[in-house]
Structure formats: structure tokens, C-alpha cells
Image 1: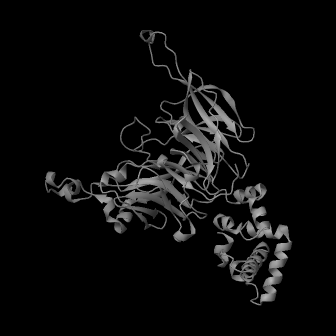
Image 2: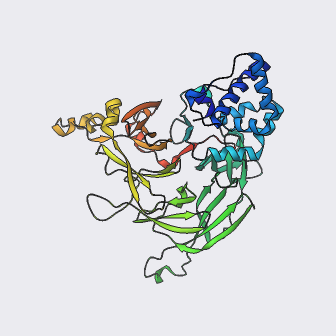
Image 3: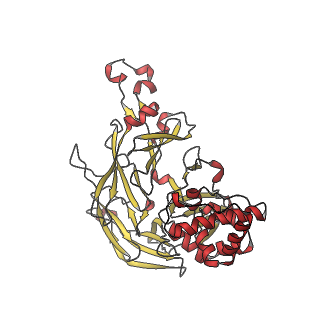
Length: 460
């Protein structure tokens, strides 16, 4: 939890020097006690005597290291506002080294909201105080179209289209929606014989201030005579890496084969690796630091037939939060229970981390439990089966983790609402209304169309 939230000191618009000193002296007292290891109950706010407040504030202002330590405990949104306090604060907060420090501290910070496309909502705000977080618009890019490809620790990878009287086309960009900075990424070394299979972003501020873009190129197979093909030949792929440090693309390793239909378009970056799903018994992940491509096993079907491993219906969610890689397994929409799986850090196997019972959700939001007769009343036969719940209408948007094991929320779209459910505490709450009237619309949204918004000062 941030400093301001812990001690009850919130950022305020500094309207006078006295209010500034009062605010800064409170922050100083909290930080001084916290750095000495005191608990919250042991914290004593600064004396209300204005002379003491002024003395404390002036001491902080004259001590660069102490001021830095205090500001490092500010929430990012407060830091952005605090740049207007003084030229010194502006210089300090705008310093790339300061941005690197605070990005390092917040590397596993949960999202403040979700970019939510394919619905009436462009952004879903997690902050209960909606005045504290404005919708992070991407209009500053000044392009005709934007497709978010990936979110990674505060940065977004975008495919932007542009059109003018003289030219039109598309460009790849990396942007920080918090600071409204962006840079374009040149196209990789594609040729007529190679096409882009996927673009992925890798950014770990705990290790580096630089980001990397991972491009998977598919080597297009050339067949002089299709009648001579006796069996199906798998294509080969090549990984190229763009580094923001040297501004160039380089080959990584040699050509490789991948499991059939590996989804290179929707990679998930977690703990230093890009992960790609495949509809087979094995999927792939790429360790960005060592530039090594490895396999990870997929969970087998526990009941039913022996064939088949993966589908968008069986695994409707694949993502990460706070350094944990998650996969959600759903046997059938007619069953009220599903599992949230977590990958072991060594990629050895998936384990069941949370169990969700949708009947607990239905007790708070009954519209999630459906009967076909509700949607097709003219076809109802009025038998016993039609009176009972026959399926559950929802799409999983995200799994959001906190510092503690019980701090977990599954964000879902249900008919008319966006809700969250805590499977540890079996509690559900409304996040937002949802305007779609067709019940099946809420069952069509995919995890790869939802992106975390994490407030960050990371520089590009």
C-alpha cells in the first residue's frame, strides 16, 4: 500500500505555501517513522505548530535524498500532479533515474483499470474514487485507428493506422499512456518469403529500463507443384528481437518448428518470458534474457474423451498479474464450477490455485444463471429440465491479484453488468453496468481483447 493511503495523507492541490508545508511535514514524519521500521499504529503525525511544520518541510526541501525517499512512496497519479509544486519537484520526478526507481518498486503492482474493447466500454476503472483516475485516452497519438496488441508493466504495444492525402498505412508503436509518450518501432527484416506471425512486448522494469519487442516471423513455404506434396509439412519460424537500447532488430537463434496453430499473436509476458498457447499437449515460452525457446506442458482433460487439449471454450482465459501466470479451465458452460490454474515458476506444471463456484455468483447476480426457455419462450416444452439452470452466461476478462493470497478478483461480463468475484472469500461486487441487451453478446469477449492499465513513469 502506498504511503498516502497508509497514513491518510492524500495529495491536494497546493493553494498556499502553508498548506504545502503542512502536507510535506506530514509526509516527512510518516516516511521518517516508516524507514525506522515502525508500524502504522506507532506513526505520529507532525506537530500542528506551523513553525514545526515549516521547519520539517524546509529540512526535506534541502535534503535531496530524503525528498526522493518520500516521493518514491507517492502513488504515480499523485506524482504526476506533484510536478507542478516547484521546479525542483518537476526536475526530480521527470528524472529518468527516478522513474526507473519507482517503476522497479511497482513492478508487480496490480492494474488501475482495463482497456476493454469489443464492447460499449473503452475503459473500466477499478478505482472506487472515480475522480482519482481519469480515463487514460490514447488520442494524443493522433492516428486514424488504434489496435492494442499487448499491455506489459505500464507500456502498451500498438498497431496504429494513419491516412492522409499523401500517404496511408500502419505503424507499430510502444506508448506509455500515463505519461502520454510514445515511440514508433520499425518493421522487422521481413522479406517476400517471410510474414509476421506475431508481435509481442517484453518489459521488466525490475531488471532494465529498456523494453524489447519480440517478433515471430513465419517462413512461407514455396511449392513449385502442389501435386507433388505427399504429406503436410509444418512451417518453420524465426524470432527477431528489437531492443530500445540499440534501436535495431537482430535474429535470435535459428529457424524452428512450433506446435500446430500456436497463437503467436497473443503472447503473455510474465517473469521474463513470453508465453504462447497451442491447441496441443505442449505450448511454448521464450526466455527473453537468455533468448532460449522452451516448451511447457498443457493440462490434460480430466473427464471425457482422450483426445484434445485446448480450445478457446475450454481455456477462456490466459494472462498474468503480479508475476503470476494464470490459465482458466472450463469444462462446460453448463457446469457451475471452474478452476484457475497457476504455472509453477520453473514451468514444470500447472496447478489449481483457485476454484470458482458460479452458484455463489448467482446468489448475488442471478442473471448469470440461464435457462434456454428464457431466450426462446416459444420453443419451451415446460418440462423439468427447462425449469432448472441449464447454462451460465459470462466471459472472463481478467484475473487481478494483490499482495495476499486472498486478494484475488475474477473480472467477468454477465448479462447487463461487469462484476468481480473473489473465489477465496466467495464475495461478488458490481463494477459497472453493461448496455448490451443480447445475452449471448456477453459470452463472446476474449481475454486477448482486454488489457491492463498500470500507472507508470517508465521512459521510452
